[in-house]
Image: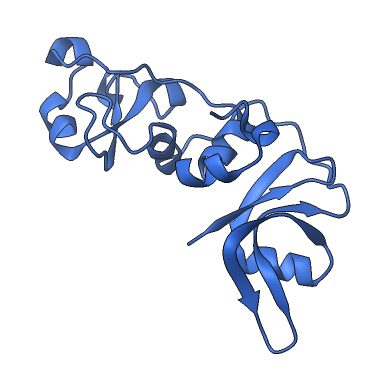
Length: 168
């Protein structure tokens, strides 16, 4: 499924939506296409438009200020590029640096992407106790960065530089 980035009328990132939802917003004249997929087009009986990669709302939407990106398992996997923080292989699970049984919580700074094998091997210990150093330290993405990262590395490269400076 392709995600489309939605920008506010002021060009600030708001969210990502499915390609179908983006086309509906454009057809309802609620949004304009800022950037399209180069070779994809959406065709219908009376319509032929480029498939939107980035759309901008025509009217400004007031959004409450959010200090932190909400934590999620998917967010951790995306933040770490689906790479295991212990060995660098493909990650499918999320590991707690300080295990929950030792008081560690579901936070950006306490969770990393992990392959199932390393997650099982580390078990109920800290990385130091297990002798498994982290290849990279966990960090907390800004809300805008977290949203841009959901588009994926390939789609990020196709977006304008001014939009991805902070997420790259």
